[in-house]
Length: 189
Image 1 (cartoon, rainbow, N blue to C red):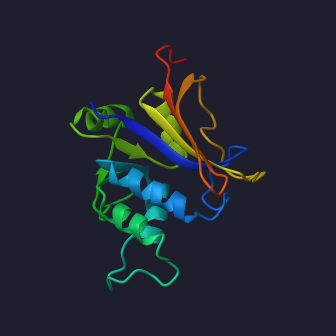
Image 2 (image 1 turned 60 degrees about the vertical axis):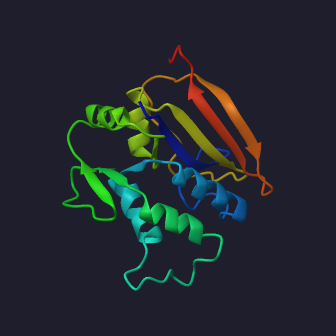
Image 3 (image 1 turned 90 degrees about the vertical axis):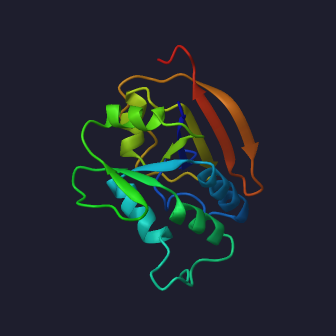
C-alpha cells in the first residue's frame, strides 16, 4: 500500500491559511517541488484544487505569469503535470490532470492507497481533517512558519479524537521555517 501524506505550511499558532505564513523562500520552494515530484498523485478537496489550479496551472499561452520568479517555476511545473484526484460532490468536472472522486471518501481513498507506488499527498484543510479522523493519513509533514497569524483556519480543527504522533524528521531552513515530519504511533489514539 502506498502511504498517504498530509503536507502543509502552518504558522506557529496553527493557522494554515495560504497567506498567513511567510512568502516562500527558495529553500522552501525547492523542498515543496521535491515533495510533489515524489508523489504518485495529489489529493485535494474542491476548494484547495481550485485555489492551486488558479495559481499553478500553466496558462494556455504556455508562458508562466510574470509574478512567477525562477524559484517558483520548478514547483509550478511539478504540480502542473502531477496526477490529481479531487474529492467533490459539487464539481461537474476536473480537467487539470485530475479525476473526480465521488461518494464515500473513506473507501475511495483506501482504494487509491491500495495502488502500487511511492505515495499520495493530500493538502488543504477540510479533507485532511476528515481523512485523519478516519485514520487514513500515514504521515504528517508540516513546514512551520515563524509567524503568529492570530486568525484563520487552524490545522486539523475539529478532530473527533486526538492522534498520537512520533517525530521522524526535523530540519531547520535558513528562513527560520522548521520542517517537522510525523507518523501516527501504533497506538493511534
